[in-house]
Length: 143
Image (cartoon, rainbow, N blue to C red; front, side, top):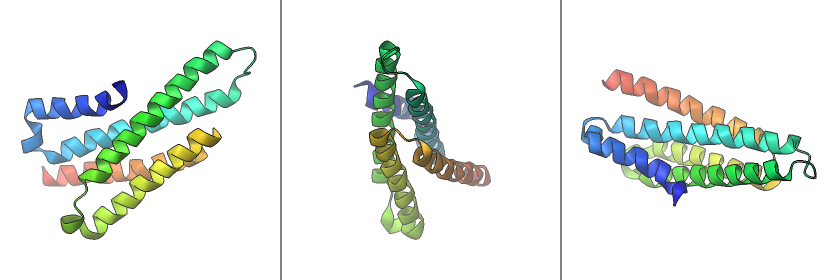
């Protein structure tokens, strides 16, 4: 299962290095960065797919479809990990807001995948990147 291995590998590296107990912000930051990265790749691949002439470049199309499928799965797995890690009792409105953002990303990824349109994925990634930036600022303040 290579799709889950990316997120799990990051998590295992953090746990192995002992950073999990030292810095939980780093774990979330790494997961958010991975989600942002896979959404970027997905968006670019969908745009490339639109440019391909199906009859002349079927080999390229197949390769691109595999990349798109891999990054959709990877993104959705990462979103699921982020959503299930939220603590609504302690997090309150912030946890609810994050859940809604992750859900928005999930919907845009599925919609972009099924319709081969990357506009929603780009918008969702921009919103996610704002959270990542805020997360980085929060980490610096808590360091």
